[in-house]
Image (cartoon, rainbow, N blue to C red; front, side, top):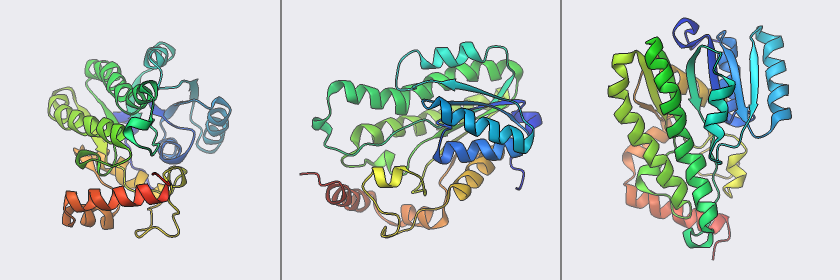
Length: 265
């Protein structure tokens, strides 16, 4: 496995949220291969333990697991308290969810949960660990956003809005954090072969454009962070489509697909 991250700049410890599956799990594996010790954060503790033991055995790294639901206030405080004794050089803020439906069909409580998980938790983690990295004068932050967020995603309105906030936050901090030696990159996630695809009502085998692999997403994301690029959109075909298709056309097409595939009436 090709090394992507310099453990001298971004180590010795890295936090990965949403680490129990998908892109988070893939990033954790790559970081372990690069020699970084891991703090794995997610709701499913048994899965985290399994992943941690496996990566420790394969790559000889240390690990710590934290059970936390980042959709709940207080989760970031818990993570900070349980990692206070560690020298953390990298934050991968990856936790998130997607749930199609009409904006007004969700309860107010559900909408607040989406915003807490998809936006405010990333904001709080970036603030908390950004302060720590500023003191050590080095580090990196990778925040998971989403393709299409800034242009709107029908039937996922609050989730799109939350991811748009992250893109603006990351672009702003990219300039500010240079004085502290902190790299920060927004991963503008494109369709990737993870469990989220069927949850959004799609079949990867019949999608007009096939999802990229987790390995490709991870490689492009961490490569961009290492170079301190402001954002990265993995997959050449998705970058081309995003550049050529007008936002209004893309939004209408996405709306029709979301409505049809999720039987929204």
